[in-house]
Structure formats: structure tokens, C-alpha cells
Image (cartoon, rainbow, N blue to C red; front, side, top):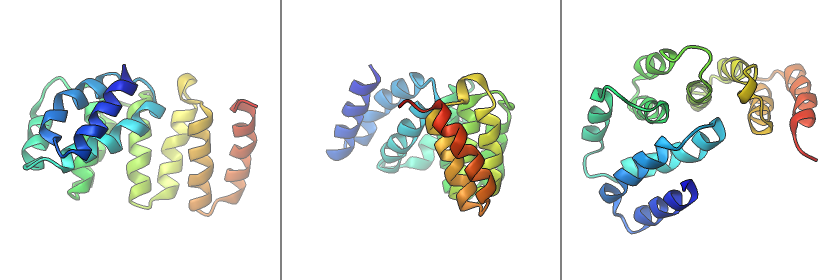
Amino acid sequence: DPMFLSGLIQEAVVVEKHAEAIPWMKQYLGLVETPDDLTAAIPLAMKVVGGLEDPDTFQTQLLETGHRSVAETCLLAELLQKRGEFRQSDEILDAYGSENTLALSQKARLLQLREDFEAAAQVLEQLVALPNGRTGTQIERLVRLHSQALQPEQALHWIDEWKRVSPG
């Protein structure tokens, strides 16, 4: 159960048992199916990795792993970006192409962290064009990105779409 694992991981972080949380974190990442799931999982995973005695070794192991889940690759991309390795971070996400909702969501997140709001909005537009990428949460992100990119017309366009797909 993702909620149980999330709680378990959070408690491990609080009591500084980061190494013990690694298997739970990997299991949690394996359950990630949607960009919304990923939005919760990546920051939590970053707390776990950040608390390790040797986060670089974990990153190297993850990089050398041949069979990573998409969510694990998204975590690796975040770790690479944190070290300033932007090109490599982008390349491992771009390898999934333009139809993988998790990779697109993570790429938009990383571009936003770099304050490249216009590029992040373009990537997120690719995401919401996909059938299972068009959620209220993702369209809300897109509205905010266009606003941050000083593109009010596009933000207003997506607000109308956000109202259409959001409940209530």
C-alpha cells in the first residue's frame, strides 16, 4: 500500500534511519503509476537519499542499475540535477520519449527548478496532451508555469481547461 509505505518512510526519515528506508523507498517508487504519485514520491525519496552517509554511492548504484523503474529513473534525474549534471539528467528522461507521463512530469519539474518556466510549460503541454496525463493537477501546474513564464494568455486558456476537467 503506497500510503503505508509513505508513512513508514517518513517515520524512518524522522528517526534518521535513512539506510533502512531504502528498500521501502524502492518499493514505493515501484508503485508509482501517475504523475500525481510521482509528485509525492520524489521529494520523499530525496529526503531518504539526502540523509544517507554516502548519497553519491547510492546515486552511482542507481546509475549503473540496468533495470530501473521509470520512477527510479526520475529520482536519478533529480539527483543528477542536484549535482549540476543537467545534460545527463535530461538525457535519461528524454530516452523515454514523448509518451511517458512520468518522465515528462519529472522533466517539467526539473526545468521549473532551473527556472526555465517556458520550457517546463512546453513539456507539460506534451504531458496533458496524453490521455492519462490530462488531470486537474497537471493542468493546474501548467497554468502556474505559464504564469511564471509571463504568458498570461496561455495561462488563461488553460484555466478554462482546468475548470472543465476538475471536479465540482
